[in-house]
Amino acid sequence: MAAATSRGFEPDCCLNWTQRHLDLARAHGVSPWLHTTLLNHPEVGLPPQISIGLANDYRSSLVVSLLREAALRSLLDAFNSCGVPVILLKGAYLGPVAYQDPALRPMGDLDVLIRDEDFGRAVRLIEDLDYRLVSPALYARDTMFHPALTFSRRARFTDTVDLHRRIRSMDYYRFPSAVIWDQAVETQHLGDRTYFLTPELNFIHLSVHNLDHAGRLRDWLDLTVLAGRVELNWDRLVHLAWSMGVVRPMFRVFEELCGTWQWSPPPEVLTNLAAYSPRWMEDRVIRGRFRYLWRIYSRLSLLDGWRDRLDYLGAKVFPPRDYRLAFAGTPRWLPYVRVRVRRLLDTLRTDRLRHRD
Picture 1 (cartoon, rainbow, N blue to C red):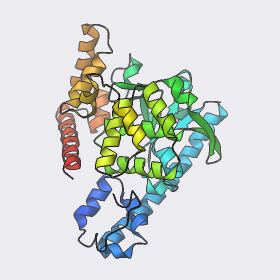
Picture 2: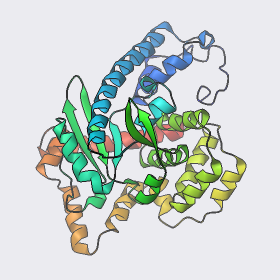
Picture 3: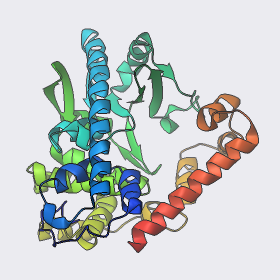
Picture 4: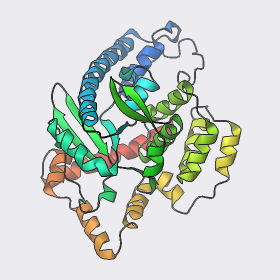
C-alpha cells in the first residue's frame, strides 16, 4: 500500500519476506510491478531469493506482453481494414497509459468492446485470424446474458480475447452503450487507430468491475495507479456515476480505498455520492454475504415468465456438454462439479483473506 500511494518505505520492512509472500504477490498479479517498485529501494531489505523471483516474474511478463502486443496489432489491423471501431478495455488500456509499461500489468486475456451492430462482423474477423470460440453461449438465445464471447488460439502462447458487445457488472449494473461510445476517445496504439474510454469512465468501469470479482490486490492497485498517473475530472466522474446509475458501487469502492489503501478523492466527491439512497438490491449484490445468489436473482428478474427462468436455471445447474468441456477440460460431470466447487471455495477464501488483511 505504501508503494501504491507514494508513501515512504520503512527500513527493513521486507526483511522477513518468504516464499509465501512471493506466492501471494504472484496470485494477486503484482509481482512484476513489485520488482520495478522495489528495485531502487535497497533499504527495504528484500531477501535475495525473493528479489530474484520478482525479477524472473517481470522478465516473463515482459515476454508475454511483447507477444500479446504482436497479437493485438494483427487484431487492430483486421478491425481497421474493415472499418470496425474497437475500444480497448482494462489491462489493454492500463498497461500503456497508467503503468506506462505493459509488462507491469499482466493480463490473462485481452478485453475489447465492439458496437452491437458491428459484433457479427467482428466475430467473423477474429475467426479469420484463427481464433476459436471457447464455448458457445450457455444461454445463447438471449444475448443480454452474454455481452462477451471468449475466443482463444494457440500460437507461441495461448492468446485469449474477450469480445464485448456491451458492459455489465454483477448482473445488475449495465453501462448504457450510448454513454460508453460517447465517452470513447480516438487514439493511436501500436500504429493503429483505436479507442480508449476517458480516464473518468475508465476509473468507473474498473471500480465496478473490481466489485464483480473477489478483489485481487492488482485490481485495487489499478485504481490507485490510474488516479496517480492521469488527472481525473472529479465533477465529470460524479456526473457519469449518477447518469449511469452506479453511484452506490463507486461509494463502496471509495470506502475501501479510504480505509485500506489510505487514498481518497476530494471530500466533496464522497459527500455527493453519500447523498444517494441505494435501492434494496444494491448492497446485496455488491458485498452481501449471499451476493452470488442475489446476482442470480437479479439475472432472473430480467426474464419474462417462469418458463424462461426455469430454462435458464436448468442450463446453469445442468450445463451442456461443450460448456463442461471448456470449463473443466472434460465433459464428465464429476470433474466439472469438482472444478466448480473448487473455484467457488477459492473465491470465498480470497474474500476472507482480503477482509482479514
